Image (cartoon, rainbow, N blue to C red; front, side):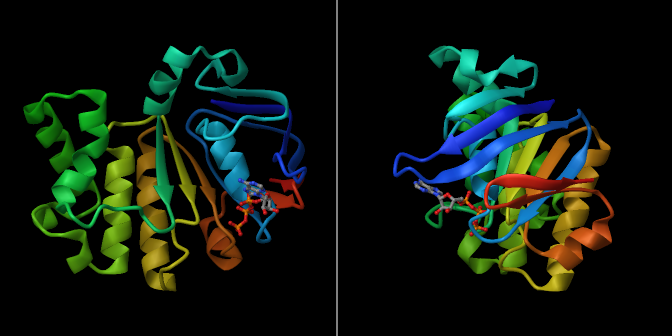
Length: 219
Ligand SMILES: Nc1ncnc2c1ncn2[C@@H]1O[C@H](COP(=O)(O)OP(=O)(O)OP(=O)(O)O)[C@@H](O)[C@H]1O
């Protein structure tokens, strides 16, 4: 599903954020990416979602070589990926429903189809009764669940999360992780960047560790 072959990333300022990274994440796997601040976790996720380009090496996502993608193919690949951010990036001038519906509007779903999918996504994260509310009126754990509903509303094959529990207490963090497990159980491939080592340990899954841009452990 995700394959990195000798991938390096040097930012234009000359900083090597990733050095010679090799790994394969199989379809249906759930894995964690960890490492110190600045180790390269966000950069690795950005390469997968095509927000950055590698300086060297090859990346394959959903059977597509990213370096060979034509410009018109990029939106199609992005549709097979859902992304959850630490600060959820919700729009506070819209309701919960409208926030979750955004990716579907961009993809051109009909309003009826979109509404059905939004409610299914909100149901999965336990927020069906909050659809008319402004996200500002929700707790931070609930806001993160809205962010997750928005990330999975188009049923992506791959779900990426960048520090999804960074602002949450241990109990809420565990709840969010259980949600990721739930999506993984129905076949979604999940990669979560986190520096919460105790939480990662409790999950008992594959852990990839970055140090100064190098993958120093994987297992
Ligand atoms: N757009 C950019 N331009 C230049 N350097 C960058 C850019 N983005 C990240 N970097 C640098 O690349 C390195 C890796 O950063 P990255 O954000 O991937 O690390 P991280 O492990 O996600 O860190 P954190 O846990 O603090 O978010 C850092 O030294 C960072 O300063």
